[in-house]
Length: 234
Image (cartoon, rainbow, N blue to C red; front, side):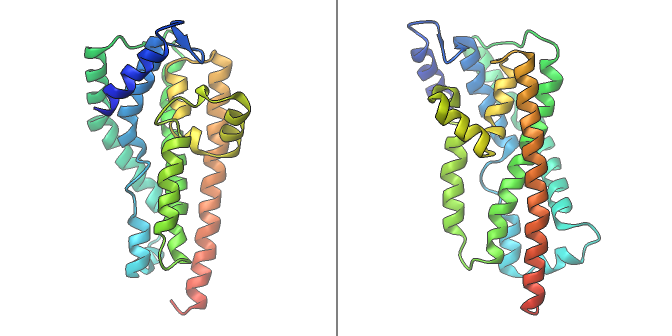
């Protein structure tokens, strides 16, 4: 129902001029239904595995594995995302295609760039979720951090509306200053060809930079957390 609600809002937005913020009606409808399909793949919410293991003390067993915890959880998350892509991505797209006229990419480079952008979105989403979970190493109750993440990730990732609807200064601040748009807005803009090929390459390049920065930060936070456990005798 959320997809239908957003679709009719987008149709209403474009009813006067036929386009809004550079998107045609078909592009906005594809934006909505691609977003519905990618929601389960990116898994913005509902991942508390690390936080639960920290609270129970099972995280100590993770430290004994030959794989680094960041690598272990990232590999598991990529496997989860691949399974979700096969089982949860196409059903919303089929519903959207049957009920509305969706936009089909016109340039062949969009397909490999879109695939790369989705994978990078998963990595960036994982990095953010890992850092939110890792707050449990220092906080007895991390529900406040989770609540902030819940509100910010949906709003700033472009889930509720395309961020291109915002004023340009605010858009640039959100896009460059936070990793949120690189999770969902970025792959959606690449797949609906909101920009030319140069713009698509710039979006994917920005995602690569955010993915590298977040994974590096995950390693750094994990190292500091392990040091804290050792100091406390864990």
